[in-house]
Amino acid sequence: MAETKDILTKYKNIALVGASKNLEKTSSIVMKYLQNNGYKVYPVNPTIRGEKILGEKVYAKVSEIDGQVDIIDVFRPSNEAVEIANEAVKIKAKVLWLQLDIKSPDARKIAEANNIIYVENKCTKIEIEKYLN
Image (cartoon, rainbow, N blue to C red; front, top):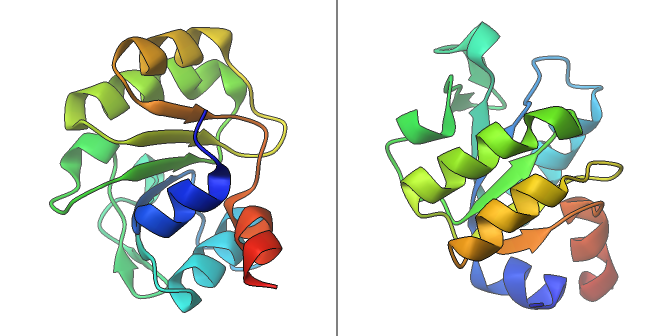
C-alpha cells in the first residue's frame, strides 16, 4: 500500500465528505488545516448543499464536484463507506480515505478492484503533521 506521506504529497485536491458548518467539529478543523497546508478542499454535505464552509461551496455528492478530486476524505459512519466508494469509482478518484474509527471491508474491495488506493482508520491532519514536523 502507498505510504500516507506519498499520497498526501502527490494529491492535493480533496473532497471532504461529512463536512460541517460547525467550525468546532473535527471535519471542519481538518478542512481548515488542509486548506492552510496547500490543499484544495471541496466540502460535501447534502443537507447544506450550495452553502459555504470556510469559503468553499458545499456539494451534495462527490459526483457533483466540478473540479479535479484526487482524494475522497470520509467523515461519515462506516456503513456509508460502500456508497462513497462507488462514487469514488464513478469520478475516478485516486484515493478513498476513511478517517479515524471508520472501516469497511466492502468499500476496500470496491476501491482495490478499481485501482483506487484505500486508507482506513487514519486522519489526514495527523498524517500530514507527522511528516511536516
